[in-house]
Length: 220
Image (cartoon, rainbow, N blue to C red; front, side, top):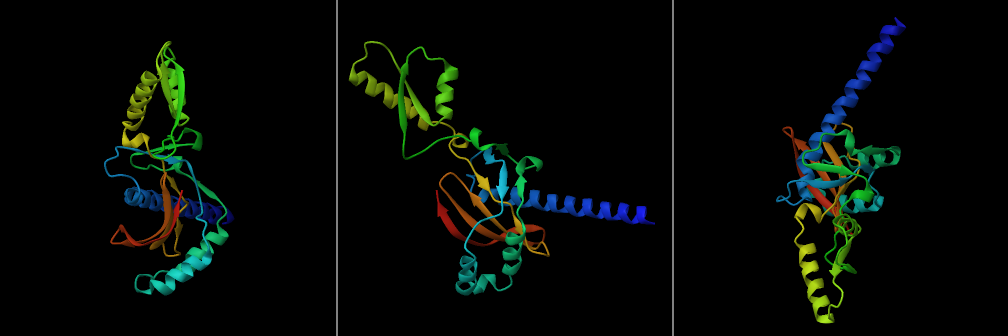
């Protein structure tokens, strides 16, 4: 009898885990466009997600100021879930549409603000040029005897080439581990891109995740 009991218990645990995995996959595939450009054919996602970090007072403030949209949201479930969940999620374990899940070192490095140029010999290999690009550096191939004007023109061309990278190679994203309410009808998750991140609350309505609130925006 004990064997049967533990076998059934094991099956139940696996079933619940599988159901949660499916729920998480459907969630991300439904909400990633909140931060990913709709024109992107794919997006880079940092492989690990941890529980969202925020000041508990932030949620309490939102509860008071946005009671019209949060009155039915079980915020207590989110707070308890964050306090009790110390694990992390590996997005490689999920079938996420259009996501290229990579570790932090392999995320594309691109910036619209601070740009680093490096003068390199004209015969520098393509592999080395790509390596510099992957490090967030714009290589400027220079021939011997170039005047300063020619160097400046070459740098301008290199900059234009850098800026012409496809949108997919200009952005990277990081999603927190989702915190579901006890009835799995609501979820709290932080969705972030290269420039900023925010907390989102979604509600499951007729099998579709609908955004309830976006708040606690953090600029990178």
